[in-house]
Image (cartoon, rainbow, N blue to C red):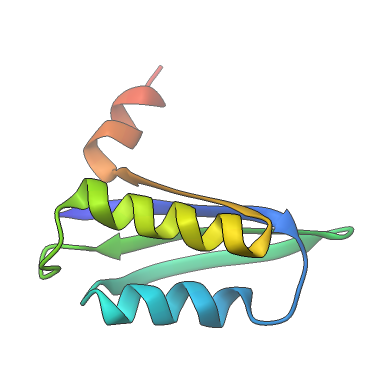
Length: 89
């Protein structure tokens, strides 16, 4: 099952490392990643494969959100099919 992970917040050292480490611990593979810094704000979108994760997707999304809260970031995960359905014209 593929998902979209978004990260937005004030730029700080270790954002990519922290998110990727958490995903790796949950056996989630990063398929594609795009990140940039807009002035002082870090933005990242990741396409991930969570099919091998032992956690239900809702728990995985909650873990990411908790990590974001600890770092002062917004981290959200959404199933790819739902993401596409919401953004279809």
